[in-house]
Amino acid sequence: MRGYAKSALSSQFRDASAFDAFYAALTDEQKDEFLRVGSSYLFLVKQGNWHVEVEGSNPVIDYFTNSFKLVSLFSLIESLSSEKHRDFYEWLGHVGEEIFPIS
Image 1 (cartoon, rainbow, N blue to C red):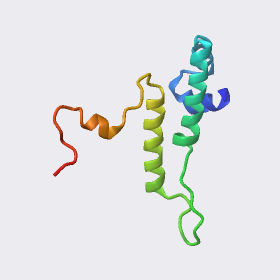
Image 2: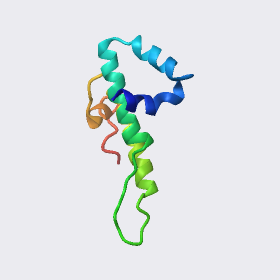
Image 3: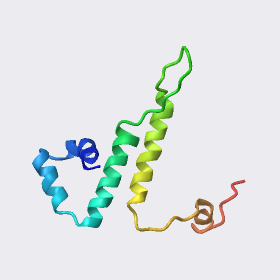
């Protein structure tokens, strides 16, 4: 998984030794998270494409791919948060006044 994370995030480091130094400075728990998110980022966001097998169509559907990548990116960011999941409709009812359902 380290190779996948390195492939996904290498553009954020001066060179391979800077990546290795950054990785070496992480705790074991941080390394696990870094590898999980880095490799997921590679597969889901950087290289993830929505493919279809329909004769006469483009095998990569751009609008599906871009939507999928956006949702994947937000999901990876949220996975790094220590906050617990809160149901959207529950949150919406507690933002001040009752605004759901919207008339």
